[in-house]
Length: 324
Image (cartoon, rainbow, N blue to C red; front, top):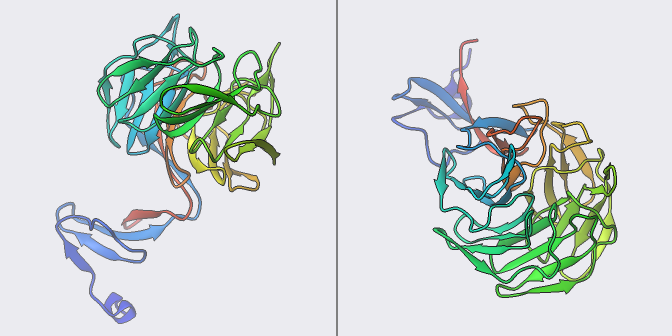
């Protein structure tokens, strides 16, 4: 039988710690943990368990990425919340509260420069500088269960909302301006990406709440209807994605709580790996990209503090070899 050196032309490395940037196919022995490890590439996306939030709730605003996320506001039994929690890739830490407790609000920005807008009760708008919240100019049309997007706290987009709104507003760091409406009015929808290039999807119409599959793409000036979700839903995780070519729709309500996850590639939605830590939940916070994402909190039916970390297909992952 050929040895590893004969096949690969080199010995298995013996290292005191895992390499910081392993390449696909690299194999090493960790002499500290006494484990044989190797670097592979994922073929399908997968969810992993993260540490729980300090306070379970739903209807967040959220911002940031998978290793530096922010969740703010929300609703838990019988009350709206002003709580803000920060995630560092491992643990959640409570930070300064919003000035106005509210849930079902929009969020945009990063862990250190975020924007919280709309919500119930509303229409307060607050800006986060990494340590505290400051009240800034309100939306022109107060509403909740709206979609929000934006990668900074000086350039955001607010769209839709209760009751079944089409209105879209753009934030420039000091004021909100009404821009082109959604083609289809709805509430409880979500969106992702920068305020000039994103998709908005799902949601519900008023009355008893008819869940929809609708997806619309925003190019900075107009909305265009594109291919629908496979499963109609409202209140999916808010929100994981990069721009109008990359998004993840995780969970939601049909009206039953679901764990179903779909991935958008800029043209169509494809079902992928379900959420793993519950039979389903809705109104979660979300952050990150389709390569490295995060879903936290929600309701399904009890108020949750669960955190799940997403690694997309094609991402590098370290495997530990066993004798089984």
